[in-house]
Length: 243
Image 1: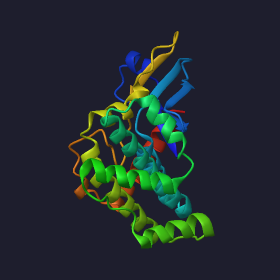
Image 2: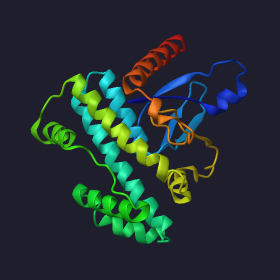
Image 3: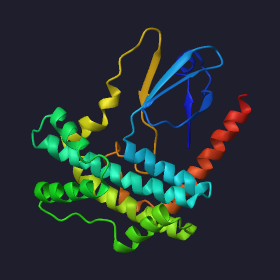
Image 4: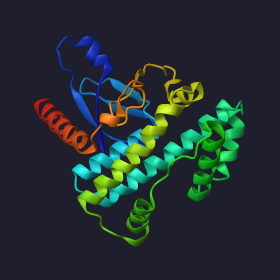
């Protein structure tokens, strides 16, 4: 998946309506650095939470026809969402961040333990049993990831739809917690470094958790993927026009 970023310094100096975009490969970190054609060292902080970006990677993989990779990304998105829910609930229970991180290391490589921790913490905090991935979709995920199954586009879309629903129905609860807002904004706490011109912000994704008033019930994953495909085509044309 590629990001299309512009040089913030050029944007401030240039009075034209559209900034020039640069195609940057998505990274595991939030910080992206590149040098624009005018020699500016551009630094952008993209502060979308990781589960959002992984879901977006899955949607892009569908566009490119990589259905196994899409299911893997959607599954990872759900796991990372559970992680942030666990940390949010613990933080809301007045447990110090250092203690949370030390405890997380004990289960960071064990997805079953993470799922158990999420289920019990959610039950204790919200007094309801959280809905989890259905048996059918769990089987599909395991067959794809562990047995080399090549899923169809329809299977992949249906898997993405279920993951999207599981995330967004819980997101509408957890997003109201102050500790959640703090956790997903930690990467914004980046200071200016020497002559670097740092721009912070988030990109619009299918989930876009920072838009609290978003009506997730009206989101159609297939239509969102079509819009994403159109946006990618537009950005490619802009790149072609600005060699």
